[in-house]
Image (cartoon, rainbow, N blue to C red; front, side, top):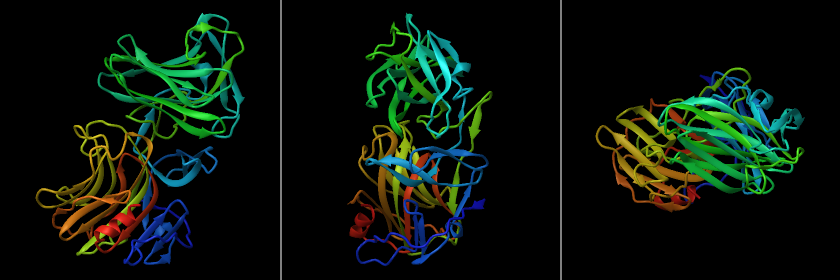
Length: 431
């Protein structure tokens, strides 16, 4: 485990009324961090590892590369019309497409590809131009990836408009999943859901006129998923080309997973990005036998896969029967239930929101706070508290505190108190 170096001076102060400052504040939006009110280097508390490179978006949205064991504390998400700084935490993913930004190496049909014709989202002259010919046809590039029945996967590409729109699709003879996008506006203009394969889709702002378009699907049969990037004319994918109209494309990705993750570049082989492992070791986070409280905000990326822990925002875990968790649940009718759990020996105590407190998607905002006391557990979200559950508190004095151990999370701020917050204080902490 490598500890992250990041010298800090001060931190934004916004504490619940009537309560002292948190014992620990990790403020990734400002890069300032406090322990017991004193500025500290992030390396004193946060342990991080990832055996390999990973990409992130900087303050202008430009794609950058973090080295092995370098936490992506300079990652930014587009929110409320601006790029916001975060710590990005992701699980392992593999880009199964070859030549992810070298489209002349793909199968090209009724089109040509001008390589390295425009500035790409990573700031280099590496984006390709997909140019239609004069045939009445689909003007496209494509590449096959083997899949098995029931696999949930995501296909994505960065695209920028010149004179055409675009659609992306994964399909085979038995099923299809496609999304149409107006690249001038970034708006989705249509979808195709063949045999129920389409699971989710979206368009993400990527700066400088670029959009990241993605589609998530469930394979309905074994065989190849043919991944297609097509030009469109007023939403039509079969039309007579004029020989000059085009769009710019870069950074395609096919990954097993229900939502797209950060871009993984490939050349002539698949590439795997290792998981980020982020934790605060025992003794470095504020735990007290009478209880502790946590407030955390940022953005979550998740889908609805009917899971009791679709995404885990944090966990203080000694064993399978001694832990505190805060999860996003999609079990049954739930599409985004936020759940605070606490367990000591027997059945857990649970405090939770309604079933649709969050909506599945990419970079979905969250702001939560939870009290884990020796008597109960209680959750608050966006200023609203929910009924507590009576439960004892396990001794977590020798347990690490894990940050986003399940799923994709962009952490804005984490605060921990070595004391149980009251109801009103929880509401204030979760705003």
